[in-house]
Amino acid sequence: MADLMTAPPTEPQTGAVPPPPARKKTQAKRANRLWSLLALPGTVWMTLFFVSALLLLIALSFGTSDALGNPHFGTSLANLKALTDPAYVRVAMRSLLYALLTAVLCLLIAYPVAYAIALHGGKYKNALIAAIVVPFFANYLVRMYGWSVVLSDDGPILRLGRALGLSPNVHIQNTGFGVILGLVYGFIVFMVLPLYAAMERMDVSLIEAGRDLYGGPLRTFLTVTVPATRQGALAGLVLVFLPATGDFVSAQLMGGPNQIMIGSLIQDKVLDALNAPLGAALTMILLVVLLIGMLGYLRRTRRDELDVLR
Amino acid sequence: MTLPLTRNRRVVRKPRAAIAITAVFFVLLYLPIAVVILFSFNGQKSLTVMKGFSFRWYTEFFHDSDLISSLGMSLRVSAVAMVGAVIVGVALAVGLVRARSKLGSFAGLVMLIPLVTPEIVTGVASQLLFKGLGVSLSQGTVMIAEITFSISYVTVIMRSRVAALNPELEEAAMDLGATRFQALRLVTLPALLPAILASSVLIFAMVFDDFVLAYFTTGVSPEPLSVAIYSAIRTGVRPTINAVGTLVLVGSIGLIVLAMVIPRFFGRKGGLDILSGD
Picture 1 (spheres, each protein chain N blue to C red):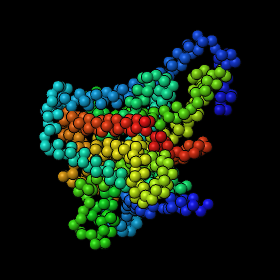
Picture 2 (cartoon, rainbow over the protein chains, first blue to last red):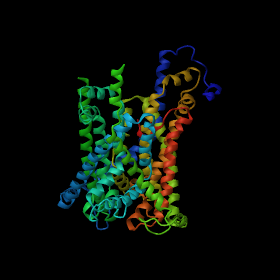
Picture 3 (cartoon, rainbow over the protein chains, first blue to last red):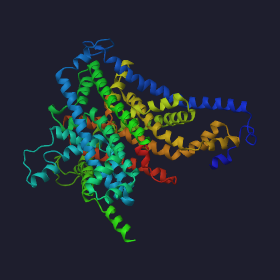
Picture 4 (tube, one colour):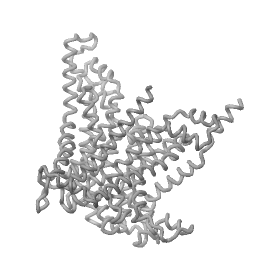
């Protein structure tokens, strides 16, 4: 602000009198040119490196690769047909199942956590949410590695379990459950944040009313809190499901050969086997499934908004 | 008086089950981080049994020329991505908000796509693009891919900030004789400064910690640090990874906390919204 005070005006002062309409029009036009100019580099960059990359991905999934593994464009449906192979279908179904179970598990864990912090966190609310958010922005890979050590056969969880009489045959690593636990650890913050926001917005007197009507704590929670925070829960489900479906780190660290996910296949095809068109087709299928999920979510929330208006 | 009091007490009563679950949640959230830090000081080679205390894994890391060059590459990529994405992203946010055209709001919607697209899709698409253009994968391609992702992040954060500014401030400056560009530079930019600084720090940390995008767009040597860590985990973990992991975790947690605290230096409350994007 001090700068503004001392900055010498370079144009003659016109401020005292409102400028005539014609002048205002050219001014607005000139302003619009400045705004377009500011937006130009970013728009060009994103078109060049994001939009065109996605279009290329779609185009290449109809392509072929030669003996050297070089991709060529084409109109072949061979890649898409190859994806109907039962082995691929099984992996795709497994990915969707794992991601779905992950989203549901995240919901079950995050509901009480968000509830406790939003309604009973008092002055520590912000600090507690920060304590959840901060580690999630830290290195994903290192966190997942640490989690895999925690869940390993010699890790603290199973050791504690065995000391309490758990059978030594119980393992978490190399199981589907282990992969799901990895995904939960990786993405649960995307469930906690929207739920927390929804509970913050919720009218607490609704809970009071539920109690006044002699609802038990659980019943009040199910019939009052859950419906009031449905939007947040839905957003959380989508936000967890999307990255979980495409993840391959959890399957790598927690799973074995029987737990690979679609991300592992893409990684394999694109990087190791150098079969780019097949990898592109796999990626495109993933993208299409996720877009359907996204659109379903958007339609659903649109309808909810209309319900509220009615 | 007694009736509302008892009513209050009944509602305020602590939900013990929810609080217990929250406590367990926090323990499990930090346990993996604690394990990595603990074992980085392990006196012996085991990854699961702690015995003795030493700095040998840190010494080993600082003598590992591959890991050190990976660290250097990650720092360079993060710095370039931060500067590039913040300049382009802030300009884009201001342009999109002020232009108020149909195209502007459409472009704003398009900017959200990279954020919800799974990173693996962006990674594969970027790699195919670079290969299609005949560009061999290297440090430069990682920088381009990271800038692309970061631009959308900066734009989404800054758009709400720009929209929250009162445009009359700029008009007032212009009425006082400033050109539109001067008004932008002397009024709007200083008002956006806390958010710009906070998102710069955040972008640096996010790019430094990014794995998937870097994995698909990097060449073989050197690899970004996250990719080097992944290779090490895949081929057989050495305890050095715990030392690297500790340094990386402490560094990025420090940066993220800094990003959250920066707005307070400017007398603004809270910085959480920077992280959640609200």
